[in-house]
Length: 225
Image (cartoon, rainbow, N blue to C red; front, side, top):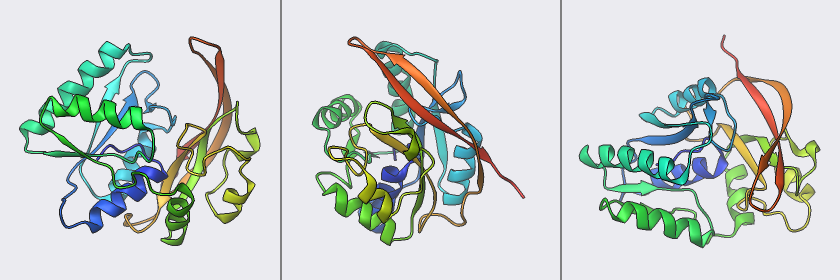
């Protein structure tokens, strides 16, 4: 299972665990090894490890350089996938919902290794998915937002019905277009809630071919008894 540490991965994993056609025996996360944080989400590795320990499924990472090229990224992914294939893994699960290009990319790359893909959330209504997430007792906090589409006031909010109603028009409620990312810390797939404290909020800009894009990140800190 491609594990991002967020709500969509959590719900997709829940659905897969209910499906007797599959056995989920490994969670895989891409980590920025330079910053020691989950790629895109900015979650500390220590908190990721606390999370997967609560879930209780074996876990591994793909450690990426700070700014990997496409070639570097694909080489590292291929090497990891080859190793998992050699251990008997036949399927790769993802939490994607409606991004056709991303699904096609995943399918094409993994098909060369004879690994099939599974998309438990595919083409489901995102309002229904997020409501199901809430109603099943999952808990998640917003830890990254795209500053181009959401104000900083959304950072640090817990996903609930009020969060859904407060989202501006045009923002997907699951953040499927990259509007926001979350950290899932409790729910039916967890053996116990993951404890954390809230650190500082940081703004970062990234260059693209067209312009700079700004993102707000919330730093969460592991909280151990």
